[in-house]
Image (cartoon, rainbow, N blue to C red; front, side, top):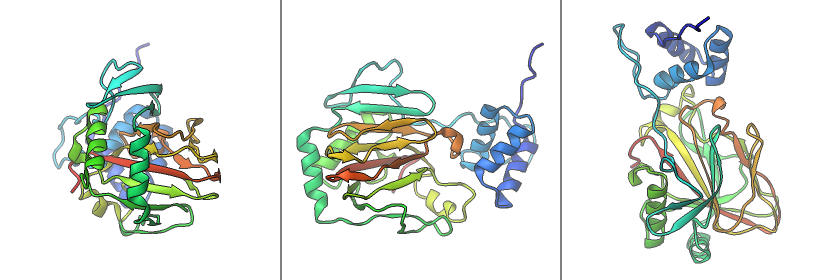
Length: 285
């Protein structure tokens, strides 16, 4: 028997909006849809259309769905080496779901050292986003020190940002400023998602600058003596920090089903330095 195709209707979109306004989280809404018989991929596509701001719920019926959100990615058919505009970058791991790529030789030893030096005098206790307001605050879940470079602030930052734009086929202007973090022994960042939850009160304010986050690049600026791995609990993936290497992951929908829950495991010996680049749907100013 041929399975009946499921169609995203305006009634479904209106129901998703109602659930969001009632305060139900994205994962709760997804599970409710699946329990009602919706296929997971269709349910996620419907939620993305409505909650991720890519499509407004129409006042009149009959309008077609807009399709999936574009995300940064390697060029189609990319192999174990990829040209990034000024150097070849090696691909040492690639997954589809979740979308994770591990790079080697993304940064040179000299670039890593220079970023650490430039950032060292500007470090302060790292903060996390406050969902209720869209602001930020110190949080016990994140015990690193960090700072932000403005986009294109200096020649080194500009070079790295251009390299990432070419490598991931994503507009330079759609990236947030480069963040450098230092994790001392015992410091960590507990598992979290990088996207902004659409049902949280403060998200609308955050999304005014560039829209939703759709990708993350974590670049390792040194090799800790022990600990400090980037872990993806839902995917069972552990990426060990090695100087010059990086892990990239993308997420087309702001839901846990993206399996992009990740964290920075505690540093056991030595310290860990990373540079993080978040990529947005639109221009980030």
